[in-house]
Length: 152
Image (cartoon, rainbow, N blue to C red; front, side):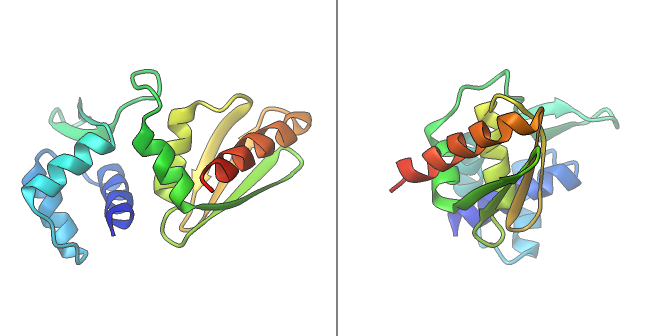
């Protein structure tokens, strides 16, 4: 439940300007998550969310950039708990996750700063990485599969 809720939080902060924990709690309740202020506070800390200035001039929650944060144990655990497999074709690497977990796993992976990865796109249960060169795709797949094996 926690991973699902935290995945929803990441999705909500990307699609809404959320200024307060109360607003975040309200949105989560709209999606069927029963949360307390303490739970929201813990999730914000575990996800390492920060407040940034939005285009409208208000402060909103956002993920901290990868340059600002170290790889946390929590992000590594999200990856380990949700990712099932990694495969490549050309310069594309595809990661399969548990349903509804690609967003959270993608955020965790973005925090790792994987070499050779130009960018990523997450769906519901799939993350697609674009690798700088097809020759480097096996290196990325090996790195991702090693992370999966480390969880077991």
